[in-house]
Amino acid sequence: MLEHGGRLRRAALQYGIPLGEWLDLSTGVAPYGLALPAIPEQVWNRLPELDDGLEAAACDYYGAARLLPVAGSQAAIQCLPRLRTEARVGIVSPAYAEHAAAWQREGHRVLEISEAGVNRALERLDVLLLVNPNNPTGRRFSPEQLYAWHARLAQRGGWLIVDEAFIDCSPEQSLGAHAHLPGLIVLRSFGKFFGMAGARLGFVLANGALLDELEEMLGPWTISGPTRWLATQMLIDRAGQNAQRKRLIHDGQRLANLLREHDLAPTGGCAMFQWIASEHAALLHEFLSCNGIFTRLFERPASIRFGLPPDEAGWQRLQRSLKVFAEEAR
Image: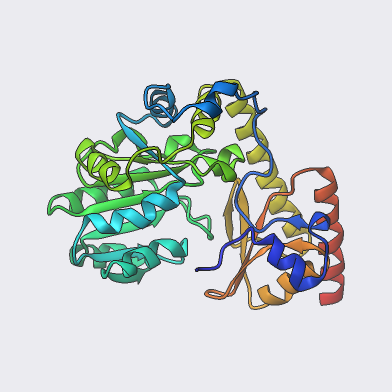
């Protein structure tokens, strides 16, 4: 199993700090979400049904002609490599590590490439995979650049896979409206923007033939009835989405400013997290962990990612700890 953020119970045991006393900033999941409506009792009593409105609401929200709900985008990440054989896969790195692991597991040749190296490598690739905005760097790719790469790949049956898990705060950058084109596959995460990672819901946006093949592989009832019902309500709640988007953008900028104020200028980031590449990343992570603040540490490159505090008490606690760290570092 690869390392991921959110493993708070392990941190509580490791540092001897009770679970309820932690400020968890280790994930890029929104720490707050839309108001949760009460789930009707019959939703728990019946098997999930495909004509319940989820697909229609999701197509409208993502601007897609067609899509497939999956048990978190992780389900698609693990299954897509099974739809090709002996592919040469370029992954723009650093990136979410599960992508490379999934393609390697199925026997494909994986090449980690830089953004600057894509144009040189593209003719040797069957699949180009990237995260936009990137996790953990926050790096963004313009739609124009992505469409150009897709066109070159599609000419010879190649794929461009774009993981848009963190794009909800800048929906105008999404390729979802064009995901029906052959060779273009877009992954969307429901849980991150809506603050519902535990619901385990994501979507694959692609052409119908690929979605049919993927659906056949995954089998029936991949999404629970309660998750389908809740997600449908949230995907049609435009007022709630707008409020969530504004709050996340504001808090993302607040986090970037707070880090700069304490000599920790972000190397990159987006509305939902900030990323700092530094040789002192492990030291900062350890200091914060000893004070009950959990961040996400990366070894390659040496870096640390901060998610958003959930409330004002969390903001003040982070500010105090960063102040002490900055003073001790001088």
